[in-house]
Length: 487
Ligand code: SAH
Ligand code: SF4
Ligand code: F3S
Figure 1 (cartoon, rainbow, N blue to C red):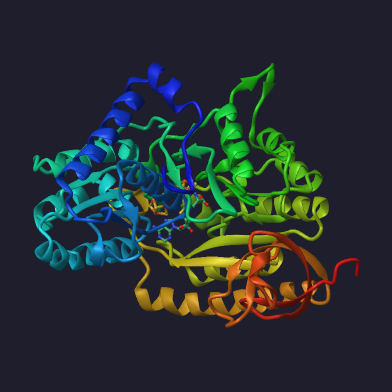
Figure 2: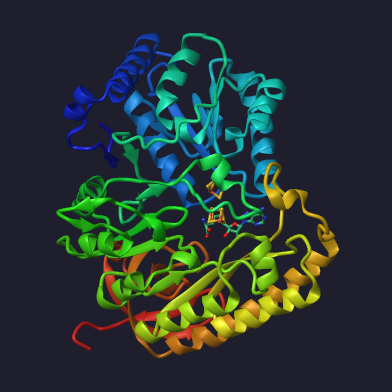
């Protein structure tokens, strides 16, 4: 088995009890045999390339796709040019994401022309919409298969069919279950995504996610804890719990005790090992006192709370179906800051939602000031077919949204600068991620501040926690020097 692959310890035992898993393992073995027999690529192992769009959920899914590719006998390549298998994991959250995916898939045609044996599959949120799967079917004949977000585990059988010259397949399984037992090939040894739940029940009126990810379903606390233990034993130092709304995690009752997100985090923090824990994303309506208390009391939980507000106008929040008011939201932030004084707070914001007037937009700017965000992720509203907001009157012209966006970005940077200043001169603990991509010769680390921290140090520190003295704070990064031991 190639390095960095996480296969649940009891896969064989699980397979005995789970016919779907047993079938998958059989297909994986069949593909492996096929690839070995046909010697498709002479001396070297066949290669896979995965192109990922979208959020951390998709990145986590791509690590599962990679796990299955590796188990089937493919080796990873960083370029599509020499791949025998290309998988595109798409996103549908905004039009731009879909356009980018279609354009990349379009570019792969010349690779298929060069190598008729190349297998191309498209999965993820975009092709979970029937109209988009149909578009791939009709306009991209060199794509062998598509698979929806519920059908990730079918990839080995889809590859098997493509290698056998079978018919093209377009899977819309509508199967919103949880697939345990899929191998995972992680991108990083030190940082890990850990999916704790899938889907979303919130139906914010602008958002496509509930339609393409299905209803909320939580993994069992024991499966999560088992995975966390293996991750830590494997060297993971920074673990992010993932879900569209982790605040509504429901792990059922264990020993008479309800396992909500706070309890789950307490249980993970109680595991041995030097690691830190993050979580993404939280819905303000469900951000509970228990969760805030967990962050305050557990040293291992990173003091960063991502709490997307989307808009500061109650009228717009109502139209968005967010189910909280700006005032209620700010109260939560107040509670959070009282319990965790130094916490970094970040948010998502949408500009130009249908019907957004200048005064609504100004209410958003006012909330940004009041909340004091360390960073905001802001998006121009993009109508998504099939969502209620796409049919709302008073869609905002692009020029108006763009102008508002510029003002929002300027304010966001000014607030971030003010917030960053609190870290200057402080000593912080952070995990060394690797060599900096933007600051030549420096290493980069991450801790509770949302900005990367650059410092000079030896590569042997990669993957370790270090103490850093922050010497300079910029809008997008911090600079630091390594603290002397015993300093
Ligand atoms: N579940 C997460 C977010 C998922 S999508 C949450 O609720 O926080 C990530 C972000 O994309 C959202 O927070 C929202 O700000 C943005 N987004 C979603 N749909 C959008 C749309 N139609 N147009 C523009 N931005 C959108
Ligand atoms: Fe989309 Fe709202 Fe669900 Fe987040 S909570 S994924 S914004 S519907
Ligand atoms: Fe995009 Fe799907 Fe994530 S729509 S944002 S990849 S859940």
